[in-house]
Length: 165
Image 1: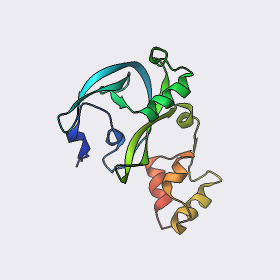
Image 2: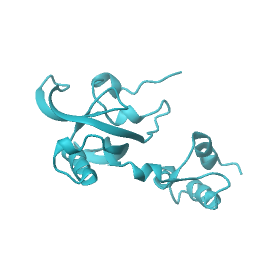
Image 3: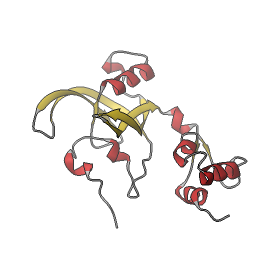
């Protein structure tokens, strides 16, 4: 059964952390290419309108509303404060927890595309496999921390977290 994240129903016109969630609730990073940046009038959940910086990507049908954190990431990655110089930039969209509104929430963020592409794949034949599996099962680390360093397929993710040997 295909499941729908509830936030996709709130503001389906813009990308959010929920846009990167698969049907099991895991977030997958996505490499995208900036196509344009523009100021756009956006209506929020409370019907209040405000001007927001929006970023369009070649690989996504919906734009992303950029907050200051993501604008600063684009400045750093492009080497330019000027939005016209951000077009064509390849970046990775990812989800991280941030403290906001008195809670820890999932936030959509931007980082260098190479941080995802250059990851080594962790497989059962990899020299670090057994150590990673033991660390996860003992609670010494989490799958998320290992995935920050390695690419892991869904099948291998299941093998890593399975108690049987």
